[in-house]
Length: 160
Image (cartoon, rainbow, N blue to C red; front, side, top):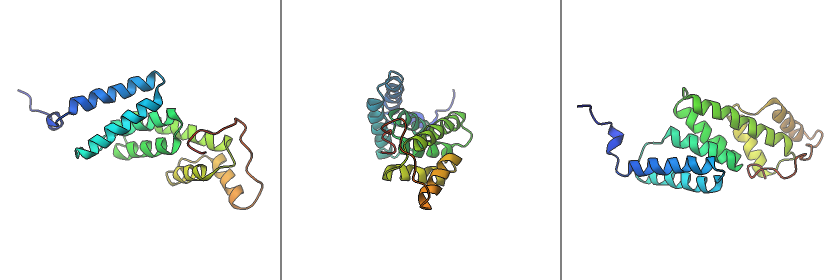
């Protein structure tokens, strides 16, 4: 007889896993706002139960936050996932994709508001800010040429 896995004795574990599968299903069908609400409720419930942080849940929160355009949260969750398991290829791949999205939004949504500067700071602290983004920030901080205006219209919720 095989020994039981310690996590298999966690009350309600199968329910949390089923709800996490629902998050992925919702996100894949484009219902990212609903998926994000459900994912955050799973994270809150897991924390309330005293469960150890889950790299998979952090990764799901990163991906869904990115799809919903909440880039600060996407970056934060992805950084957490990579810190929890630096060898996880899914988290590492998502970090590259999310950092690319965030850098693009920062470049094309300048001049930045408070949230844009907060995203820039988070990206810089984690070594994710591109040279183009760093250059825009340097120019704005030095009183040089003003940052260009957005060329794609309204920025995502991550930098507004």
